[in-house]
Image (cartoon, rainbow, N blue to C red; front, top):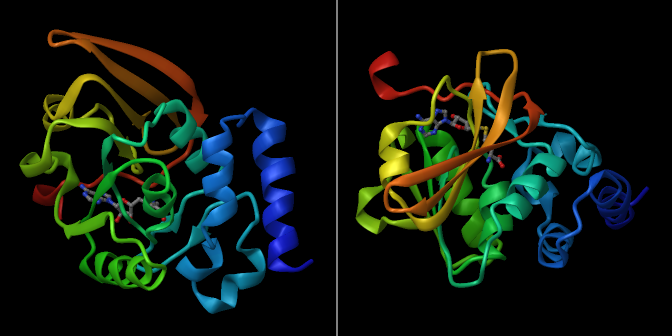
Length: 212
Ligand code: SAH
């Protein structure tokens, strides 16, 4: 199967068949070349419906989870989005197709640098990558209409909730090391947060800097 065929297979059998129906999200998933964000040795697996290893013991997220997150964040073209856990940069590229600006944070410097280089090579001009502890958020550009956390922890870090705009949506895997629930938190008024469970998932851990 060619990469183009594999990408079509991903769209139809992994995404649409499992409930991803947002046309803008499907168009973004059809657009971003996942193979350009992973090691060449993994090219043939680029559109497999699973996480794949990247450096520093981390993973590029499963396409279905990226698409589900993008859909359930209800992104609009004028949104500013904060992502915690840049990893390969794949999800950042998907989000960049859907919002006006993406701010993405990664604690591993080598991953941040590589993602920055790859995203520039792919022509993205609306993504800023910063190396740092994402549990503190990125106050400079807050508030965000959307926040996507790509690593799991026992609770949503308070700094991220503080940087969520009124009407903003945050999605994060919350739970223990082996199993989490993907939660969507919506700030429906300045003082009201509502929480919904989007299902069981498995992510790498969110590690804050004092634990390093
Ligand atoms: N969205 C990525 C998947 C990344 S996996 C992709 O599409 O490829 C989660 C990433 O979160 C890892 O790269 C890990 O290093 C990073 N991470 C974990 N804790 C973090 C923290 N406190 N701040 C920033 N990044 C963190």
